Image (tube, rainbow, N blue to C red; front, side, top):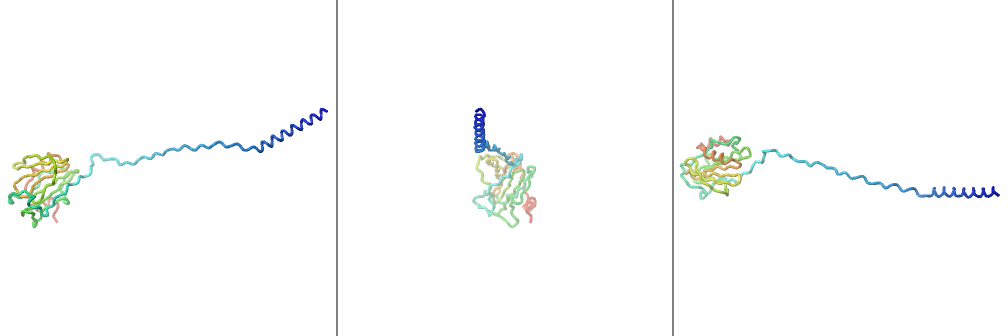
Length: 212
């Protein structure tokens, strides 16, 4: 009797073990752990920059020039034609040289209105410009404060607009005589105007570099 009961118990235990194995085999596989995306790293690229060069500025542009074609007599100051002379400065600030491409001097067979010559001589350097003009030309048109002064025995008027200065000299000759400066110290420009002395037009052309 005991043997039969033990046999029956072992039979039930075996069936339970077999059922557990079958359930374990049919169980779904465990879900894999979720994969987290890799953190995004912002890549910083240096912004290219052009270093500025101290003291270096682009050369300023000149205002429009009233080239003689010839100039109208009504716009010229009347005077004694015998007193007209070409003028050249004995003083020019260091570093400034004549600029042939920006200069215009009458040749021997050229005259402007009133049968007088004309010239515009430009000096450039250090980012500045000086223009000396005379005869049958018109000075640059600046709008600004006008003051009166004297240069030796001549009267003159000075017009200042920003960094531009215009000195118009009354020398008693027809046409105009002026000195224009841009980026030039006022005292230096006055020194240039006061140093003007007569010169032959051909010599002036040679000094500027306009001889062909």
